Image 1: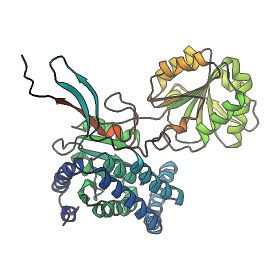
Image 2 (image 1 turned 180 degrees about the vertical axis):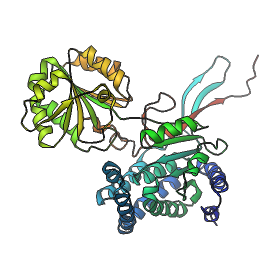
Image 3 (image 1 turned 90 degrees about the vertical axis):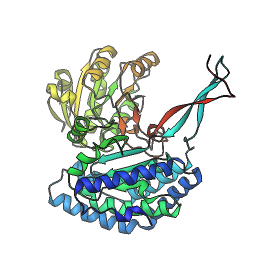
Image 4 (image 1 turned 180 degrees about the horizontal axis):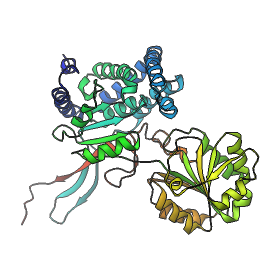
Length: 433
């Protein structure tokens, strides 16, 4: 019988979390040795479970939505919480996409023959156990579970209390899929208590947890980073920039900027700051200003941008403060600045940005190349919307989150971000002189 059935959230938090950690560590050993076929079987079974239980998932999610709205949860958080038919189908598709990806575990690369006769290479292996702490989005439960399964890891998931019913329903489907494939149900565990003390326990159990991945608001991530006793993979803010260069296709620039800001306001890869080269300001800003005015987007501008955008009918234009250049709005608000050069744009992004995702819109190839070399962000783009900064869009199948750290993973964290490398040595009896 699965030991997961013996874990009870009614126990004292410390005792419960210790039991969760022990079960995860035991399951990680089994998962590390699991065959690709078994892992893929679990993922395909999970996709089928999600589709066949869509009605039940929406019903459980509705109870979370009602409670969230009653408790005054911010609109962007409620939006992230909602399980629509599209979100449910995307979760199922992501499981199938992860199943179709090559299994990285056990791959040996960089093998080199040494003068002594030995051959030295590196083997890709699972990290072991990762803890995931996240808010609102119940689809993260499936993203984390699917990547844990394919990468041969175990994981302990702690979703926000506002999504507890949705997450519990999804987790039961994950456990059923694991069991169906002959893998340990404890490989994916959901912390069943909403007691915040559970988070404090999870991030201070290095004997059971190898890495923590927080995914949520800045306050959550800052707390985890400050208090964790295990490594943390994180990003704090999503202050993403779109820069319109001196040489640019204006139709393309309007289309991409509009999408980067308004396709969806709540994700961390939505553009929050717009920089426009002075040579294009008079041509570009009235056009994008009209788009933003029609969609009710407030523009917080420097003096030069305000002088132009203030003439656009219906535009909501206010003076930008210094804080606006740092801000992640997650709302129909955008900071707008006119810059004199590419150098100024790059310097502005590196100073005020969050090293998440930044884009240049330009027909000047050398300028575009300079931008992607010199902007210090986890994703940099040429002539594309910042909204593409996403594991699913990058072909990773799903993502566990986005890292703006430089160790151990950077950008959308998919399968490889949940693995490590160890050296392997192949010999035929060689001894060291």
